[in-house]
Image 1 (cartoon, rainbow, N blue to C red):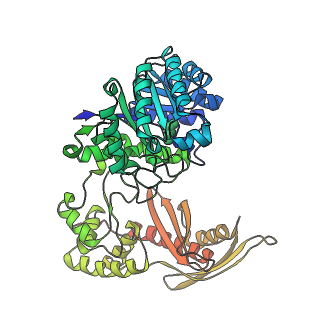
Image 2 (spheres, helix red, strand yellow; image 1 turned 120 degrees about the vertical axis):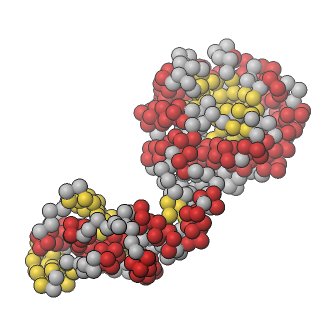
Image 3 (tube, rainbow, N blue to C red; image 1 turned 90 degrees about the horizontal axis):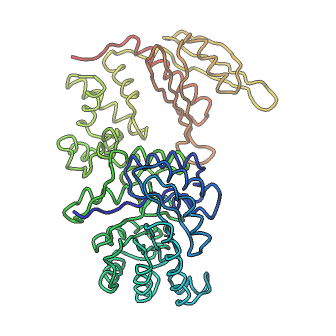
Length: 509
Ligand code: KIV
Ligand code: ZN
């Protein structure tokens, strides 16, 4: 197995995602987690660009004892000196990462330099950096759109000048696996001193190929992969660390390569990055998305329950997720439903399972997801034959900029009508005060959420509330085109479940 170095650039290229700026404390907190994840190199910032980036690189380099910390510099002495200053007291090692473009398009329009000038600048920059540290990375920006022979020339010369890692970035996410692997092979065969450095790959995801390109390059001998957590980064992002690492782990015979990443820390790191940057992970994102280990189809659920490897190639536990989820919805089958009942502590007779399953299917036709609490309600009604205690009869609310919100409500308690009115800070608060008064509930409202089931102003609102009493928590749901009515139904629904829980039964036979 070849050991591939993981160069994490979440704090530098990842931070270049629009809106993902991190302050020094946030970078430090993330760097500590990246150290627990056991990445080999953390690129913590671009010190010349701001005092914050300088401090982040410096503090992280001075604190971490197991990780090499890199700072980015253009091929200019002032940039390099700033990185050198930031990493000079690095606990483990500091790396100076020098970048200059090598493609003609960048030379002509951005740098306004000739190839010879770029070559000279690269050699001089690397030589200058070498006086500070032995760990120098050179990046040929836009390498994949550069002339291959010029790229070979630059690579050979920067290695002679002292670069220990040479990075071949696909800066604009333009290449494809077949081409990128050919380019890496070309460099491996044509650059005479290539064995004196580690070849690194750095892929952007503009065509959705960043991970595939990185893996293709690893197959051709790349020894370092540059990536970010959740694949965040400039434009469409960088290659995602978790996807590359888990691809290598899952297909060892194919790639014959591994990393030193502690995979059980992946999920936690992903959550932290999402929280700090505010960039939500798409539910179907590989490895760390909410649905990555969720099975909904009945056929899949049945197969999974018989033998998990039928539909799962990775173990969620390996990346730090407690377990797979069988999402109960309209595609779920009896097997998954019965299994969930068992997990919830309900061991019903086959007859009871059959009845409840019919009702579950009817509910799943109306509702996108069926939660455990919904199932509890079904069971409560089916098995104990207990009907709801409270039902909403009518609700009228006055509110707006002129009036103090007032809710007038009638609910029935086992057929008997009860009425009251109450004020509150808003229409929902007034309604909830009125309901609490009539039901005399002692519960506390823990959470209130409103979702729109469809788009548009006529959309159905779906309200979820979580209430708690004496350590028992229940979740109620209600939907209606009027958000306040949906809110009232959700609250009454939760109170009914709590009442049911108080009366019913620990099922179990
Ligand atoms: O995408 C790129 O080329 C970069 C370099 C700084 C490596 O981020
Ligand atoms: Zn980049």
